[in-house]
Length: 109
Image: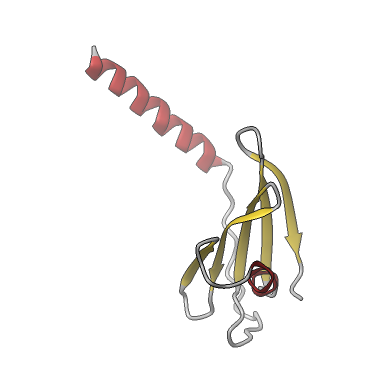
């Protein structure tokens, strides 16, 4: 019985992931992009109840950086650095329910 439940859950999980992947879109690489030393190429800021949960940045040398509230960088500086990226987005996660409730795209500052 446990094995059958496990198989059903695994199938549902795989189908769910496939369903999500079908709607994904790859962002093309910009070969003519301007790079500014020390500025990220892309950034995603995840907030919940207007508080920073995590900030993800890709740098021009290929590094992926992750910051959260446990870091020593003040939130204002972190947001300024994130919004200086070539592509910058913010996702607001619901305070009371599951899922995203807002989305913003920012032009570089």
